[in-house]
Amino acid sequence: MEGDVALMRELGLRAYRFSVNWGRVLPAGRGAVNQAGLGFYERLVDGLLDAGIEPMLTLYHWDLPEALDNLGGWLNPDIAHWFADYTALMARRLDDRVKLWTTLNEPWVVADGGYMHGVLAPGHRCRHEAALAAHHLLRAHAAGVQAYRAEGRHQIGLVVNIEPKHLATEATEADRQAARQAHAYMNRQYLEPAIHGRYPEELREVFGADWPDWPSSEVEALKTEIDFLGLNYYTRSVVQADPGAWPVPARAQRQPQGTYTETGWELHPQGLTETLLWMHREYGGLPLYVTENGAAFFDPPEAIDGVVNDPLRVHYLKTHVAAVAEALRQGVDLRGYFAWSLFDNLEWAHGFSKRFGLVHVNYATLERTPKQSARWYAQTISHHGEGL
Image (cartoon, rainbow, N blue to C red; front, side, top):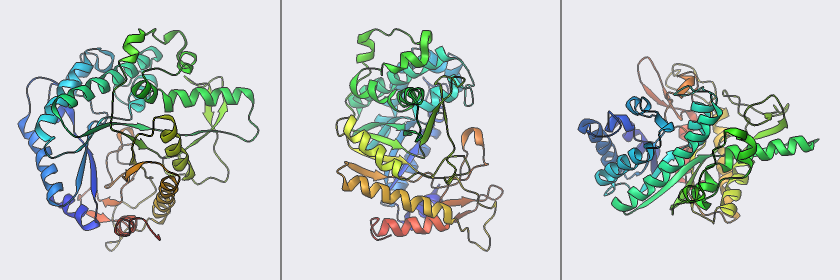
């Protein structure tokens, strides 16, 4: 940890976003505290501050304690209270040093990957369960914000992943309807309840008979006063209707002239400007952060003579930083930008097969080597993104 923070300082990072592992702090998800686990995060925060780096803390990034999953996980309505208690604990211990907090990271991925398609933990595949999990994630967010307000005195927000849904040139009415549903399901399902206290009407079309008829008072209670929104942006989708697709009758068209990453995502930097403008317009001009933005490209398992050249990642970052600058020029209240990821890391179901890092990690020796992209990023920071 100390070496990683020293490397952050060497690269000139002004801020570092990290997540707390709920189970590392509360092994059973509630009750007894693991002081050693909590102490780790206190040392990390102290080290960052000593290095002049602002910490941004995410409370939940998909790693639910197994003990809570055994009780139903995100299907159990009590999870909102468990999350609130966990939030209060963290605020009591770290709010004197951490000024930027976020409740959930990408709740759509938790519900869609974990309960709709079964590609992430807990591996379920059930449309009704996905609707329940989504609702309880939002309840946990609201309860977490309230718990933080009772204990903390700084800023707290929500992080969502947004993917613009574009239409092909020769779009049909079915294509337009599919794009509208896809936009509601992925991009609006969490923002509208959290900001406006209502669900998009299109979700009834997506979920059909599996959509619960939530009491209006319960949906309105999902709205809380947050201080900012975090945006995780990677790509767009060009949508075409597909009646066989599930749950949204749409599939993404691969673009013949597009450049694609190792994860199959199209490089489309103008979508970042578009998304920031849309969020700024639709959600009350809340301050925004780009909390994740990056790409997986092939990198060798070992540095060659201490060097890892990654020109495609440099190009990706360069074009997306320019997209951020354009959003600022058009009046978006954007407070910060975080590249994903600082280090090559475990990419969930992809394991170690996809490298997003600006810093190369030799998985056999754990040696860290800043890539060409890290050096470019350090220069960009030092120039405030100008002239690069």
